[in-house]
Image (cartoon, rainbow, N blue to C red; front, side, top):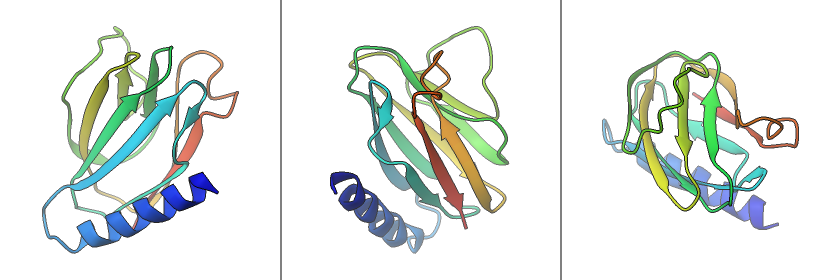
Length: 131
């Protein structure tokens, strides 16, 4: 029930932000040990997204989408792993946050997931819907 309410709140927030022109859609996603606080996010083609990732877990987590068309990708607190995880990726150490900014350029349904070994398999996955 809590996830449903959070998902609905994020949907309304994104809908309100989508009408604001070129202003970034502000979205917050908390990362806990083996879960995201929301498994569905929405964005609009051509509108910047400011995705705040907050790690409330004891382990490092990340947000990754293997294939997605985006521009303007940046992070406020990059974590260097020395390797890449796809077109869109940001890691967050325990107790820290990272703002991942990007602009989707093609509509679609994209799976996001945590690339830490075993986390995706344990259910740390979600869907980004770009309209």
